[in-house]
Image 1 (cartoon, rainbow, N blue to C red):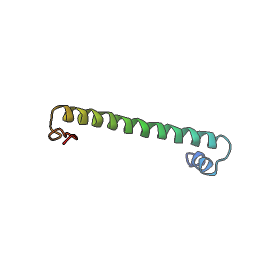
Image 2 (cartoon, rainbow, N blue to C red):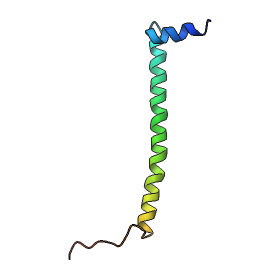
Image 3 (tube, one colour):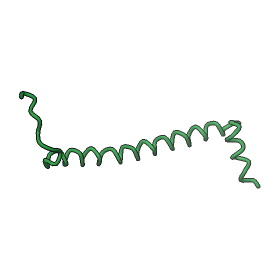
Image 4 (cartoon, rainbow, N blue to C red):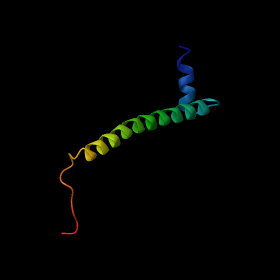
Length: 64
């Protein structure tokens, strides 16, 4: 099984394996950040629309 050798090198951190592992971890972190931003932006937009549409309840007046 020649495909298993690079995986063992990654696990041990031998040679260029550490650089490849770092690259894969950074790539995964970037993808997670993109997904979080992609979920956060529509959620904030929906909240803003919901508030502007008047569905958030009556406006509060603090001067009572």
